[in-house]
Amino acid sequence: MLSVKNISKIYQSGFNKLTVLNNISFEVAPGETAAIVGPSGSGKTTLLGLCAGLDRYDAGSITLYDSLLSELDEDGLAQIRNQHVGFVFQNFQLLPTLTALENVMVPMELQGALNAKKKALALLDKVGLADRATHYASELSGGEQQRIALARAFSNNPKILFADEPTGNLDTETGQKVEQLLFNLNRDAGTTLVLVTHDLELANKTEHIIRLKGGVLV
Image (cartoon, rainbow, N blue to C red):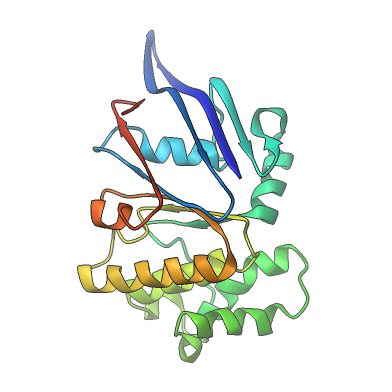
């Protein structure tokens, strides 16, 4: 599902070069779960973005769902993301002018899916928020917003889900509920899961742990 081989990412700052990731390699098979961990500034989020085709790498190769990302233009990358990838972010990234239901429906409508409203309501029910369907993001708690974001992430039936600190903005109790929901939804859908976290307890719930330090795999 995801094959990362000898990936490096370098940022140019004036005359200086900053190597954020250096020669990273790992694989995640279909249906597996993996966590990327490491201290702040170790390159975790950068690596996740490269794997999801949100940014370009400078060396190596990444194959996502049988597609070599370096061979795709921006439209091709967008198509891969729309058809096969789900995202969950630390800051939820819900659209504030849309209701919970509309936020979940957006990816399905972009794909021209039939019965988008019915499917979105079913997903909201799965995350226990069917009764909040008509509420706007500003009217929901942080935990509720992240549950809406989870429902949205699964709305396009993704083959792989990338989650960046999915419980980072939540208190411990709420975070644990969101974690359980994430793993349950992932298992039921048979989705591959790759998450970034500083929480080793959460990381230990995955099948593989990818440890970074100073941009190097340790």
